[in-house]
Length: 459
Image (cartoon, rainbow, N blue to C red; front, side):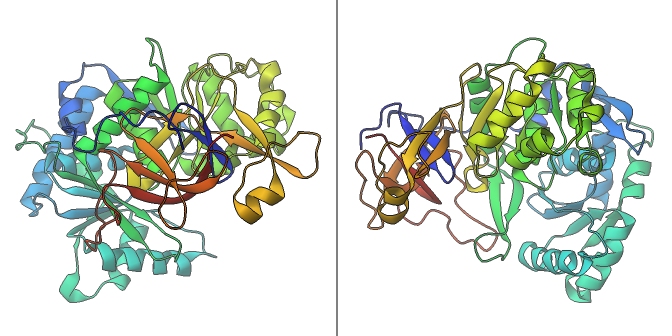
């Protein structure tokens, strides 16, 4: 297959390849989030919408540093050391943000986990957290009172981690003084452990280094073409890679004013997402496919009266299969509310590649291909179809790979497939994570990561 700029399918979305001459996985990593935060300009870092009333709390960069430094000193006094794993079972609020920066100031490794469940799903949540505890063997757990009470029943005495409550975090970070920071982690240090369920449902902890996060964010910023005056909003869960790296760290690292809406608030009232984009004049905001479908089909007009979406220039769509009907339905409904015609930007990524692999350029029309269903599903052969043909299906493009990524398509024998044929997508580059918590290598065949996703090239 020729690797020029052409379209490919990824699951229910299309993907575009680029020339094989890209940054290699051996390119030097550089930077870390803690160093970037310390080097950033003073001023507002983010706005957190707190409580049922969604009261805005503006946190400056200087306040974030000072409070996190106090907390880092407390963590060191409790014995926290570099590369120790720290579970975070906290909502989207001050305690999560300061705890994250504090443990990174100490060169520890963040392991965010969903912090609560409904009564109906409590047993399932406990089972998942137990498996994560067994896999990650954390030295510390920072959580809500409810989460810590559950943790106490899920670990035995010999492996019991140090438990730190949300209330303790909030108290310590307000204590007086500005303690000195230890030597900050460099680009090669472990930063984060992202748990994925995998095909078997067993948790797998993907280990990510500071430099990989920075490289991924730099490449995403390059693709999005950041502009002066950009504003960012996310409601995505912080235990998910799209929410943690894409929704929290991206604007923090790039010094974009950001608004954080707790995921629970979005779940209770999805229309808040668009109301807040309108209110804060947000230009950048990501979400998975289901959120666009929900807003396009399930929320009444009365909930959205008077919104203005004209500022929203780049709307990530990712984390799930992407469907033409969803995107066009969303655009059709909200065009009258000022949504820019080319705001929707399908993307592709996975935790094993830090986060983002490909993304649509801003201002570009959503790329859609119609192909015949049966040849593709039966033989992996791509034959052009028609929109008015019941035997054809639509495939949505997810943009060209970012500058760090190199891609190829192979068949079951790991042989490159020809144009017009489906194949497994392989990715290589410096953002590919090579180990999980059990020290199993994620890269099985040389430098290439087998994503497990299928793609195809043009005829």
